[in-house]
Image 1 (spheres, rainbow, N blue to C red):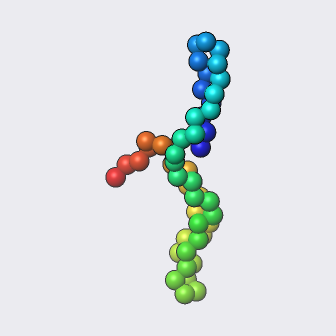
Image 2: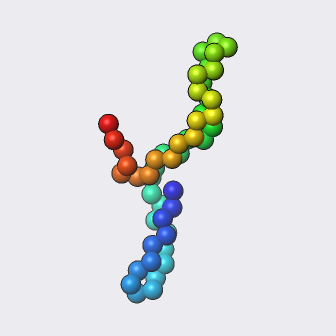
Length: 49
């Protein structure tokens, strides 16, 4: 994940932030597919328990 930052001085930069991205997750137990193409993006510091 990247965030674009603009400063008051007119400078622009990019921050590489750690996060979690899952695309098209699938899980089967034998012939029983229990997860079918799950996608998820979690931004940094957005975790909850």
